[in-house]
Image (cartoon, rainbow, N blue to C red; front, side, top):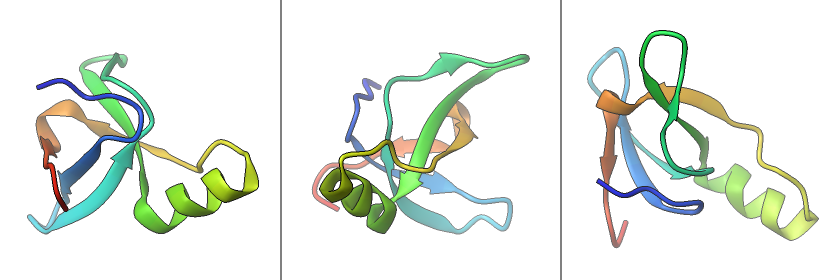
Length: 70
């Protein structure tokens, strides 16, 4: 799965819910596994309009699903 800055994703939470998010870039190697830095859609839009980096969190790559059109 190719992930780029701005890719629309779904992430699986600990309670098995799926949340729509935006990627800040491709997966990176963390300490023990690969992670994707993501932010919520509202934060992505605010950061873009304010010319700043979004506030983001690392999510394990195995919990990320690429979704086009969400």
